[in-house]
Image (cartoon, one colour):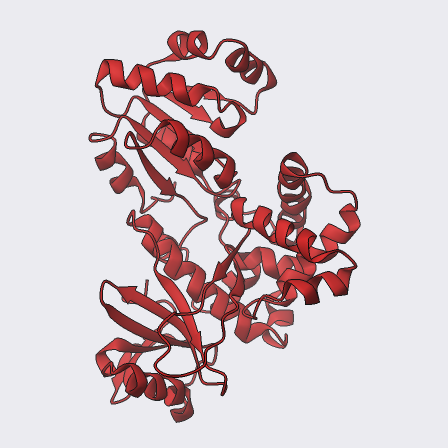
Length: 385
């Protein structure tokens, strides 16, 4: 079993907070993780219709019969439980009594914020990180093998073929979750929308353009994007707000939490196809940015990640805020470093007044070294994530 980096943080916080909440996409390993960390706890899944009906019929009786020391999987299905959990943990004063998991972030967080504020520690568990695979000796020398395969645990634990499992994942989980949250009249249009999102990895989000291409309204596109975000399929990277006396792009960029899912939607079925694909660079950029986000979440931190672009076309792929300081990151899929890769870093560095120690080039090779213009780090480097 691959050790999850989030394990230590969750275990520590369970000694200080009465409720632990773990959210993330379906099949990211949430259930496996909490069962491993809390083996003595009773486990109940609200995916089970009988358990769900019992919880809805009498929430307090359900909690008293099964708890304390209870794991509730897919807890968002019965939001009535949360106010009763609040009362019970306030009465007992014990820490780590309830472990809640959920794959629909918005629905779970809406209930948590209303009833459990100040009583819950919230964590996001995403598919495997590069560091987790490296620690388990499962990281390839070539990033291309991970781009098209992705990082969902089941693909590594059971050695399944991504060309078979990922399309089934979209149909079984992504489309089902959408139908549970909002009414989709045209499933074919939504599937086209998913493929359109994959084709716009690393690009600016334009609701009107998306709607025109698939024949749905602006508001429908906005709603579908929101649902994909709450189900941990995609995320938007916002532009950095400091203007440095320049007019800046204000639209966010679009990325997938799992780059393998994007490749599957693009019809990429092998490493060979990926090497010549027109989106190879954008997919590599997606891999690096998504993994940077995972690294923050795995430390129990909220990511402060942005991109920067002005109206003259000057751009930085990733801006990481470390308190009051900034780190500028340029991402290139090439395995050989060229001098012009540093052009954006030098421009932004001079504009934002950050020195070479705060400028990083992440590339597709396997060596780490430094240049006068900034640090050069491999996509595999432990320093990066």
